[in-house]
Image 1 (cartoon, helix red, strand yellow):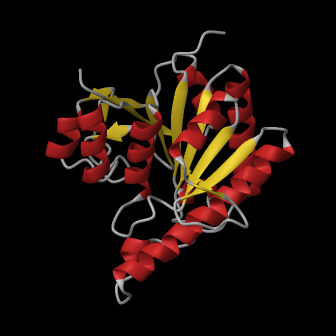
Image 2 (spheres, rainbow, N blue to C red; image 1 turned 135 degrees about the horizontal axis):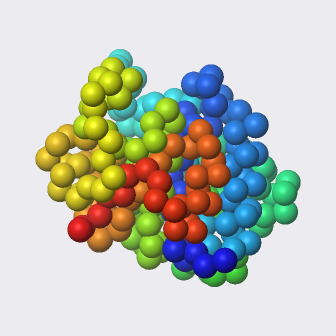
Length: 237
């Protein structure tokens, strides 16, 4: 089967891994996603994953805590999620490597770009954890940064509870319009809160397309890489 993309970054929020609970890790969800990753990997797609940590801690939302400390706590949450993902993938015989932006040699490799690319070329799934290693930057920005570094064809931005980009919150406004396609500058000018502005700007500067879709049905990932039109694509038209 021909695939539309050769190398992808799959960005999954921490909340998406929690299922409906909003916190913690749902083994059922992580296993379902893992089986889809196994399938697309077997088709020859090189898969890198950036996972958030919001199911454990959201750095930006801690009001009375030092922001830097809070962000580092969020980075640790992403590492917990990454190890859970690695375990789920390896249980179904998918060779996986976790790389951390903050060194934790006992549990993962430090992030080294050339090593990450080599793993991908060998058919291994690479999970980038620990964010970018810097406070004040989101895991969305990490996804954009890593996509630029490894020359990914696209970022698949998996969302929980929404199947694309809308003109307004579809849960609050039934008249909101779903966009099929957007330019990066539209996302910035309209203030569409689908990705933070730093991440969107980085993708715009490096011409990295972003595809926003719903992760409730993980099989959407396979449909996207094999060419189906799902969700909202953000690119230079």
